[in-house]
Image (cartoon, rainbow, N blue to C red; front, side, top):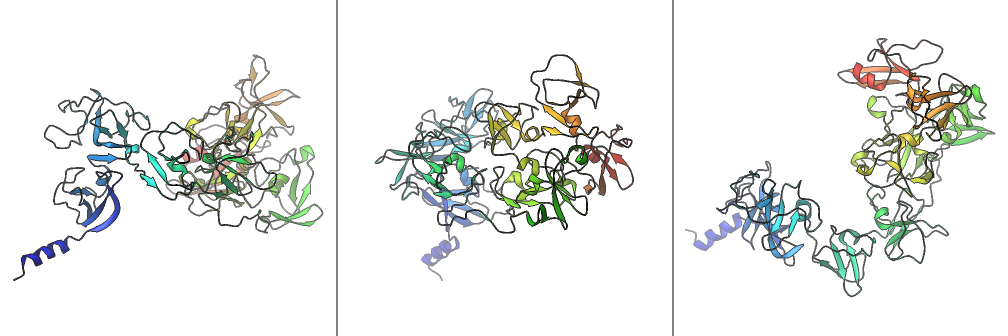
Length: 607
């Protein structure tokens, strides 16, 4: 017969625990307890968070146990315990609570000591007498919070986003400082020495010996980085010599007392704020402290063409030689550039000596690979035409186009908005900072959220990328910023000039194309002799950047091929099958069965 000691040993061995890095949030932040992982999805006792034995997360075959506190948690329930001791408020425990908006009171436990999770607006629940409007730490409103943590002793509360942050009490050997850093368990209203910003929602650490305060997010700032907005590497420095420079990303003044990034190449004066340089839309999260700096790429895979003679080139995407020609007015009005799909007008261009292939000189010189402020990874030029309707839209301006495009060179780009990142040539040619004719101040590419944007010209909202004034609140979307100053329409060989709605009288003007009223206070196109005014939308139409000659594959319920046809002025404009209007744009779309639609929107309706 086995002894009692042997039976106890077998029982302990059958419940072997695997130590994990998970922390028990009931423990004090200065002395945290580690949770142990036990096999089995069913808990012998009640889960300390949800007060249930059954695991609600199907497929999870383990749970957690804290031997010090003698409590158990389901997987994921250990993140939201009913009670916790938080680094933001270590002096008192915090209780998980809900807000009753009808009586403006909070509750967590009922009179029987059990936890109520399913009923929020129950008037029978006890009124605990505390009222909270905002999170004590970040001061964000609790109006839309499903739950939060509160202190039953004082009026302290944490919203859900702050409650899941558990900063370490002390950081030894930090990357940004030569002494250990101590966590400050209070919202700090002092500027961070690494970024110069005041952000109470970001936990702060301090070195009292050096009077040094730094945000938790700034402790691990990289020492050397490369961003696509600048040619050289940028180096972090805790302060700059006396200078009146402005940040080359946000164009705000640089305070030399705080940490910044700068370029150390010769007379280069490029300086950026540390937060701007390491923003998720600017930096690719690669630290280059131990990597050798490459001074630009000069390999053949970057050069777009080779010179084969006087004014002759061999473009990498075309089988024939191209010849440089001077623009001579009406002769080239019907020719379109393969890259930007705009007409050959007012600029020198390359022409194929054997076929109908044309490139503006500036488009032909675009590199096959480049760094651009619109994306934090290098971009490569793809001249191939898209073959389906899912590959037509530019992610910057939103226009459908079938010209050359730049795509992200990194496979599986982690940016959720850039899974199919592609930019048309018109948006690529917009500089990082320039003065647009519609505004007196320079415009730049900001890193602010799309929620702060509204185009002052077309009133469009929610743009991922746009342009903002360096001195005032003027904003411009890329669709408006890339409208050409001069162009030829399909009705006349004489050029049209873009007017920006200034200095015009209040008399009535009419659009030459749609024959509707035209507001001279808004952008429109003008031809002086004879005097002709046209809406911008009537000049371009819904498919102005679709070059005729291509065949696309559309899919709705079945695969459908559609060909882009030139809508020339010397033929009768066909009627659209979908909207029953005549096709008025520069192109229309013809299906294999002979039916015609006027735009991409009508294609979707037809298919």
